[in-house]
Image 1 (cartoon, rainbow over the protein chains, first blue to last red):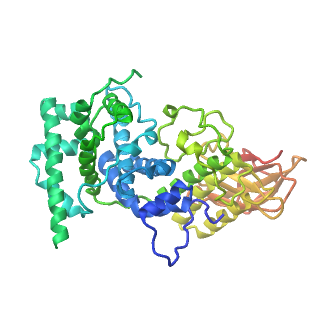
Image 2 (tube, chains in turn red, green; image 1 turned 120 degrees about the vertical axis):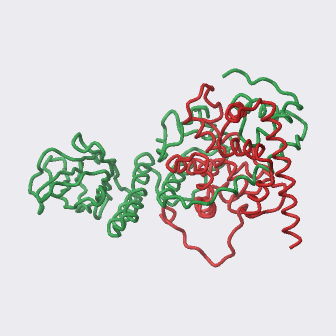
Image 3 (cartoon, one colour; image 1 turned 180 degrees about the horizontal axis):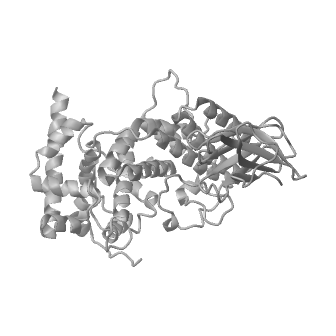
Length: 202
Length: 286
């Protein structure tokens, strides 16, 4: 019964396993590995989910659902080039977006994949274009963007709005929204790569 | 669901920034995925935009989730694992289409083995061989799962409420549920306790346990009393307790003859015969 839910496994003196090692153990159906990943990332996941849903009860559901998604799909993570951290947080992001869209009154048809996200979302995580950067450096990089570009990116990523909804919200033509998002991401990439270079030179 | 419109490579490249940010409507997203599933091109623009968007996940301030969330997750994982292990090796994928997966519940209810629509397991998952990881006897999987689900949450409740003794009793109850030959049954509140639910555990020998959550506070001067009822139909007093934050755990005297476990409200000190109405009851017979 030592792995009964809710129990905490004793830590040992061995070096902490990497995220990727934990993911491999999750793929082997080891519950202690998902527990360890939860210990590492639940705060980030809950912070992200809360930011997107603006509802802590819903954010809890999202985080639980996302970690169950990790549990179910870990065997496919092996094929991903993304870090386990990026992969896991992208699942949280997808689930949070799905959750706000389900909640929001909309004329849109129900998301076909909102009901079965675990089957596809694992392909939607990509390796970071720069190295690992801290929150401040990333926020600084985002702050270098023209405000209309930053706004479009934030409405999409954190607001869960579709391109059409962003166009309505910002009173901009759809084509403008598209180009703002594209240019904004390109500029963000430039800024991140520059920040990473700076970090390495330090 | 209509077939998603077919996109060509240039259209996918055009939608890539919106796709990686999650800003496409469902049909557009499906169309992009349909294209990617079969397209021989690498679509490096997706990796570039996606690898940039990945940093946005780092921006929100981390927030510690409520402690109970971890318990809920691990209960849900246990339920998944148990179902995994109850599937014969190489069993075909779940008959339930993935689209039927219910929206996330606050607490994922454990699927009942043998039910027609288990929680969706994708085909990849079903190909994996179950592995004996939990040393829990999942033979009586249906009932035991419900018990574990309830019990783990109750343990957590006990810890959070600082009711250490209650948590210890709950652990004993969970351990007893895993013993060979243990009888376990869900316990439901009656009409006067619609919010109450819990479980009873009666091992082959040794004490049994009754755990019920969601109980009302008994009136002043009164308390809850458990009863065990055998084939003769005579209720036998089986312990007194007051709920802490609605949760109550009572250790029952050993009795292999018990068929029903019930809960009533009695004057402090207990009664020799139960005062109606029953507050909760569970059938452990059979």
